[in-house]
Image (cartoon, rainbow, N blue to C red; front, side, top):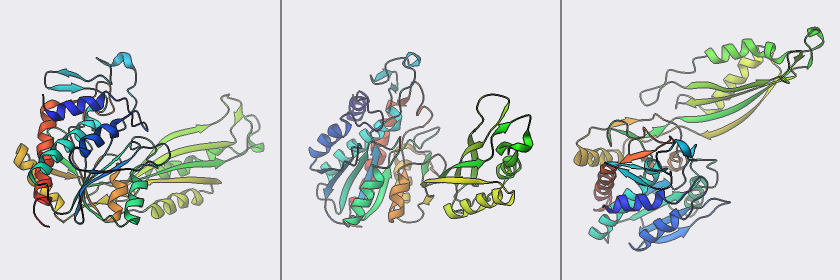
Length: 378
């Protein structure tokens, strides 16, 4: 049994449902300490975080990842207990196998090989690990980065172990992500009896034309790196639950996934203008989950592409697809960020799994990246 597989299984056994770490970082920290890393726990609120470093000075290369996982869902639908790893041929089942305990184990194995071969490597090899990526993401990577940057730690390259691949390990690497902007729209009306509509003001009727225009709006055409900005209405609620009462309020929740063609300010301004033009009495509550980010140029992407090609023979597609990740908290500090991990077809699903062979290949890819970037002065 490989070291990567063994460590992945040990991590899966720890039921680290977000924001709980459940001892994962203690396990990873022990592995890193044995390799000569200095460990710095960075707890914020109820979230466990770890910053670990080997070497000193610049450049700083960081592996980043999260130990928390999403809830397993209905246990009776799993083929086996979600926090008891199960092998079936070349597949390893368990919550977090693909997202992203397998990646963390591969990072540790790659690091063990690298520091054994190059104990006096230039610069700093670091790990930034959190336990709140799958939930609010307010006391994890974002707080750690604020602290590290304030202390003068300037990370140059960061590889995040998010499951990026689709049909084959390494076929897709994410070099950026779209921004995510959430909002709750509250339309103000006047409640009344349906038989006396002139004595009331129906917020559904009042907002219908504006909502139709809003949903039909083309925000931009995207660009060479990003698809067009999209808006999706996710929840609509009004009324008391009976048929003879005109509601007094209408609540609409929606989300923008936006490209670098837009900003938070431009989307807010355009949205509010649509409803103002239609004379809708309303208010908005906005929440930015993250701005879009993009890595282009530099040394990291060629190093990643070359490592994947050497290990798997795969030519990599550079992508900005998918949801959000903690890269949105790292990249704005001038860090080149890529996301590289196993196939993502089973993440967050019942019977999550990863190919066992992929774990060893992923460790070899990570090792090749380290060798290219840190084995010689940069």
